[in-house]
Image (tube, rainbow, N blue to C red; front, side, top):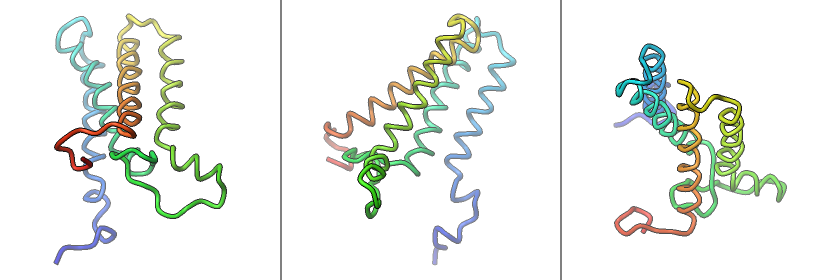
Amino acid sequence: MTPSRKSQPFLRKHSLSLAALGVVLLLIVLYRLSDPSTHIGSFFGNAIADWTGVFITIVMTKFLYEKGSAESKQPKGTMSSAVLELLREHSLTIFLVVTGIGWVIAFSVMDSQSKWGQVVGNIVSEWTQILGLVLMTKRLMEAGSKEH
């Protein structure tokens, strides 16, 4: 008999998101210690953005929704207000747009050629990719996927 999800320990229930966060933190440490002008230093900088996107995708798709996206879980029930329902139905897109604007603002005031400026530029690119994927999955399908 397998234990119910609620009775599983915290670490077991959140092991994927914690592992992804651990990778992001490790990459940040390695990047801080490396020279970004080397191949390995450049790799760590790019990997920070990629793994931050993985972490955000894992965590945010657990809690947020995108109505019509085959990749997003759908909310149960309805909210008491049409405005609240609209915000909940599109909370994933709203989160990505708002935080994406924050990353764009941060990038715009940084030296794009600086060590961390390049990382933040890559995060802006990653956010754009995630948002694009969320929006594309609302209308487009892929043969062979579980949603097709």
